[in-house]
Image 1 (tube, one colour):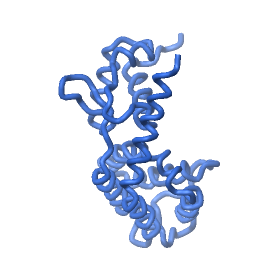
Image 2 (cartoon, helix red, strand yellow):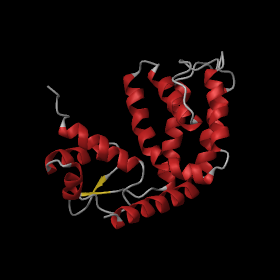
Image 3 (tube, helix red, strand yellow):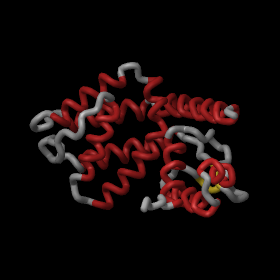
Length: 210
């Protein structure tokens, strides 16, 4: 007998994916009834999933009730990037070697880099660090498409870092991670503008769909 998926888990996975990829326009409401209808669920698991995502910083509570897609702020983005860099820095040993080697091969070096960073933090065995990293990584995933538009060398940059993660000894990795993150900190305002424009465009397309 096939086991039906848990409604909360189903709602959480869908809503998190939509929030991370910019389906919801900044500052606009995430309508519980509409999402429940789309997912063919009751409103209860959708409301619970949205409340959980508030803790992840992917949605926020509206002043008059309900939920909103948050606006991105450059200063907040800089803080999140700095924190992600800190998590990675403490997850790499003093010799500059990652605690974990190569993972599954990926044709997309950007995805491969994301996987290496996550595995490096998890390999510390520090559950609190891994949880904190997961939250900030999820928040920064909202900038993924903006980075592709802003940085024309994104794949080459990611590929070079992947090579450092996979090289014996990982020499130069801490410095390269610092350069990678500071580049994004310096471009935070531009990335936010691009991300907000992309989210608004995605929302318009969704509204126009039958």
